[in-house]
Amino acid sequence: MHTIVSCDVKSSNADVPGVRLLRAALRALTACSVCLCIALSGNAQAGLFDKLKPGKRPHEKIDGTFIGTVEPGRWTPPKQMGRAGQSSDGQKAGAAPSGMAIIRTGTPGPATAPGYQNYLQKIADRIGKHSPVTDVPIKIVITGDRQFGTAQATPDGVIAMPLGMIRDLENEDELAFWLAHEIAHVHLRHHGSDWLRDFQDRSLAMGEMTLGYVNAFESAWAQFTGGTGKTGISSKLESGLAYGHAAYSATSKALLPNWNRDQEDEADLMAMDLIIRAGYSGEAAFSAMEKMRAWAESNNEADQIEAQQKKIEDSLNNSGTAPDFTAALNSAKAAAGSVWKKLEGKLTRRHRSPEDRLNALFAYYEREYEDLSPPDLRTTSFSQAKATPQNALAMRHYISGWEAWDAWHAGDEAKAVRLARAAIAAPHQSDPELRFIFYTIRNGQEQQKNARLNLEYAARGEGATLKIYQQLVFTQVGQGEVEKAIDTANQAWAELERPGHLYPVLIDLHVQNGDIKEARRLTNECRLNHRKELGKTCARTLENAQKQSDGAVASSQDSSRNPFAKLTPAFIAN
Image 1 (cartoon, rainbow, N blue to C red):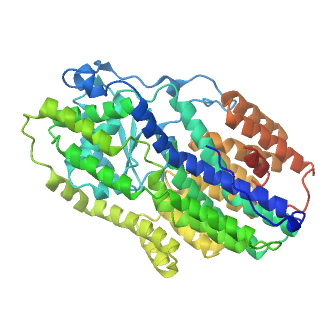
Image 2 (tube, helix red, strand yellow; image 1 turned 60 degrees about the vertical axis):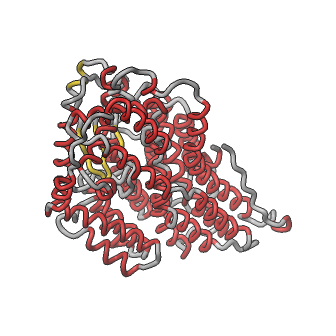
Image 3 (cartoon, rainbow, N blue to C red; image 1 turned 90 degrees about the vertical axis):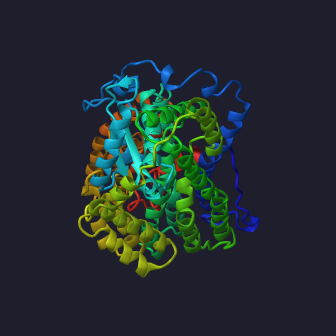
């Protein structure tokens, strides 16, 4: 998909200093939207492919139950989980990250909800006993995601279940079906040989979008004014970084596994077999799937991102020789804010059409289980689990955090602060995602000291996510603490098992700190392990960073607060 947006600046202004830079900045912003559009259009393309693809559906290819076709035996992890190739620091370079690292990279991260985690683990263990595949190390992790359809399975058996799904389901049987669906992906070893490559490619696209989202404004403003001092718009840009990360958090859902049509059908069929064998009602699968369909339909507002992009263009185009950066930045914030929740959901719809899946599952159920008398739904046990003081408290704190986020983007500052404070009250004062929400609000209020304190709390919390570490790096460099920024990036690098899109960040930081040798080593490692776009990006990052370090870039560019300004040319080149 290629999108070209022109910046119709009048010809008389063509040579005005900064106009060409504004066009370049706009191209970077447009590229960000292209990343979104590609992700948003992926489901439509997949749907077309599904219609054209010949052959029968999995349940039509077999006689009897699907689980009867699964070969019994001891489970082994996908090959890429143990891939060889040691880096200089002793870690496996290029191997697939662990499930926990994936969750901390591409979701809001683990929630502080031990009661729910124990409850779901017991259900998962009960389901797993009825599979012909044995010794599967399934581990349930509850994430702080509000979206219904963002459950995921990782190659090593970690199952991430969002609090938003638990909130919206009505009984344990529905919950068991979705757990069984994700468990089936692991038991059937659906994380194939292409999974790692796809994960890296998508993570690179999301990482570049994060860098480019606000960078275009930062670089264009500094070059247009020729100033090096801190301006009013520059301070606004600092708060704008948080919105770039909001966009990243939304779009990073594209990092989740993308299953093909047969794999989705197979997981649905095996989930049905498993829950019936575990004593749950097979009919609950249909109400569970109906909820998925309703959620998918409610997240069908992709056109809003294009409308917000148009506002950004208009803010720049209509101001002639004096571009209205404040208006443009506000439009950028709106693009990340007003459509944040819908984009977050839309981009996670990697699964096939819920209606198609529902029809296939119903046909299978009628054929294999029509004469089966379903047990009563476990509504009481589910309600009791939700009502336990520990679980009810966890849900209440997260709902407060989600509502604080909504109130902030709706412009109700007082309500946002009140709800955010309630979210981080004991015993959730150290929860990384809730602290990050409060950080975003304080940063937007330009209360930099309080914002940083919340960000540091978030980084110290158990299960801190990549977006938190990235934002802390931005903040530390913005305050002249490059060595601290390197320490923070290295901590994220180690804890999150070498996420690919941290390579450019570390390369850039080491050049800034004068450690060219380490920057070159990282570049070579990146190119060796990631031969496609990420390797090229790392090489360009080193080249551009060295040029700026040598003084090739005009001194008027103010990069002292933004360590990633050097990456903008590489981003535009893509």
